[in-house]
Length: 147
Image: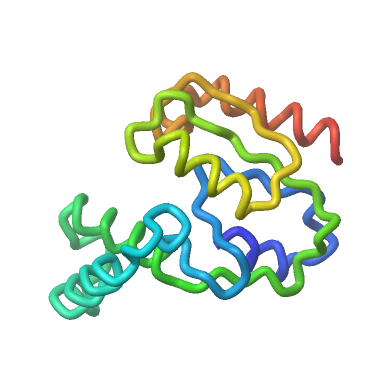
């Protein structure tokens, strides 16, 4: 979770960039932001996956199971913003052809992230795979501006 990492790194972090990022207000689950009122099934599915595959390394798991465990873990953990200054600049990279996060969901995630700017990229949910050069240019431009 990006805010927790930023809090650990303290002043070394100059800008947060959420790329199709899962966020939520302090103490809330990201699942509550992207699927209001439906976090129960997400946490139940995560519990079931953990019971079935607990102790297995990610490398030994089927790719879909590993991805589900990873995504659900982020979605079902309360967001912690303590230690992240409210003044820390934030950008949300919005994926214009994202089949996972609708524009409405993206709007809620942008609000939850506290992003002051939004940069659109013409990709699906994984721009690092679909358009790595375009994403690298976006990140380099942000780094040039804030570092």
